[in-house]
Amino acid sequence: MEIGTILSNQQLQGDYREVEFYAPEIAGSAVAGQFVHVRIDERRDCLLRRPFSIHDVTPEGGVRVVYKVVGTGTRHLAGLNPGAVCNLLGPQGRGFTAPAPDAVPVLVAGGYGAAATYLLARTARTGGVLLLGARSAGDVILTGRYRAAGFDVRVATNDGSLGQRGLVTDLLAGVEADYAGRKLFFYGCGPHPMLLALARYLQGRGLAGELSIDHLMCCGVGACFACVVKIKDGSAGGWTYARACHDGPVFPAEQVYLED
Amino acid sequence: MVDLTCRLGGLVLKNPVLTASGTFGYGAEYHRYYDIARLGAVVVKGIRLTPSPGNPTPRVAEVTGGMLNAIGLQGPGVEAFLHDEHYLPFLRSVGATVIVNLWGTSIAEYGEVAARLEAEKEGIAALEINISCPNVKHGGVAFGTDRKLAAEVVRTVRRATSLPLITKLSPNVSNIADFAEEVVAAGSDMVSLINTITGMAIDIERRRFKLANRTGGLSGPAVKPVAVRMVYEVAQRVSVPVIGMGGIMTGEDAVEFLLAGADAVAVGTANFVDPEAPLKVLAGIERYLERHQLKSVSELVGAVR
Image 1 (tube, rainbow over the protein chains, first blue to last red):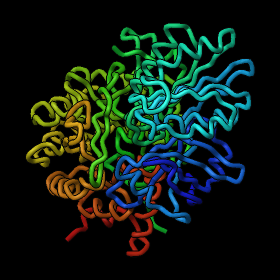
Image 2: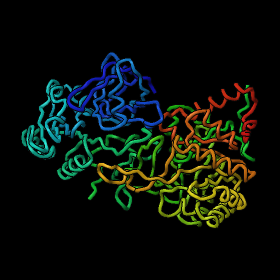
Image 3: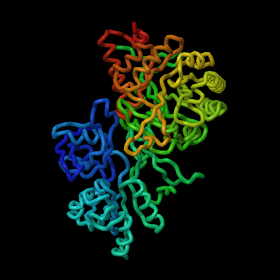
Image 4: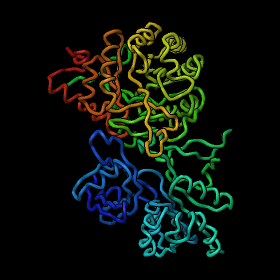
């Protein structure tokens, strides 16, 4: 546990915000895909911690989180000023593995899932591809940072207000064609249906990748079995529930069990 | 210097702070934060004969002052618990005092699980019979809300083991003290209470249940006054040791349970908020004893006037 002092907490775009905690222990050991489990409010009406993907870390000990104001916890977080403190647990979970030197990382993100894959892009130094799907143009975030990291950014929106109209998975075939002959390694983070569609695509074509996948989280340490996801195993049913916070949240794409 | 030793009949614990089953995994999950051998006892998540997948997700929902859960007793089964390095062998290796919570979908299964634990009981201090989980369709609370069935489960487990027996009681009954009396008469050496209170939460925008299981068990600070009242009622009725739990977040909360008649306490939902919660509860009890110039925890037990 580390007490994180808020260095900045500002609007990124619309309801999306970015907070930076001074938490040198977490900043020094975090890898892309891991999360911090934040106790936002010590009062009892907002009891549980909230998990946030680590967006970025700084050499000065900063831990950056991108979040969207969606409920009690995030609303309270949005109201905290620099100097306020939060109790942080982290870095938690298993993160993404770095891409092999000869592989092109293809990050497939839905909505603010793009926050979780950014550290991978910034540290990859080889460039790569970001496929970002969102509801509407206002939900397309962080693309400037990915372009600055040398990434080929391609966008799909449900309403067609930015980029291609449709789903982020509609962009996969184009990337395969444009990068033909190159070894691709996929990374996914986003809403559950998007991740299942991505896993189905990758498994169907024998493509390698890793997906950050979870369900509503509670303890964040593997004790309560709330955030379980279906992972393939050798049992009769073909799957077992793995704890996202403890065994994940990042799982190999080929291990993700495809529900009907 | 205060004496924190806790005597629960023949079961002697180094202190009166336990973990509530289902909130502490199998111990290893929290050992990376502190030495779990410092706890009075680690009460592990419910164990049955075979592995169980548990319920579909979402399994938890935060509510005012607490949370609902419907995990559904996901677990590895008794053989993996006894032999897999993550479970009992790990707990033995760190010297933790272990209480195994057990359940079944039939009375016979309770007996079989108890017999397997009895056969390899090195490192097991006691068994806690779970007849109160509200989140499984077969077993759990079905046995804990019928006095005859509850007694039958306890008698069956009693025949299978010589380990100290704790029966964890359900608050989802009209008179919990009647159940306490019944399970003690059937051979339970002590009782623990309360398990969660059945509840429900609805997402009004989506007009859907917040839990896949529709109902779940309420825990956290919201249930504490109910739990304190029930501990008081049970302690008034039975003479065996009582382990009290339900929304304990601080040492002061724990003292309230002790005053109501609990001989020991268990920390549950607070573990999810602060991994070090049980140690902080223990330190809080110690500070209270010093502040009131008491030498031992037992001086507090049932001392409410």
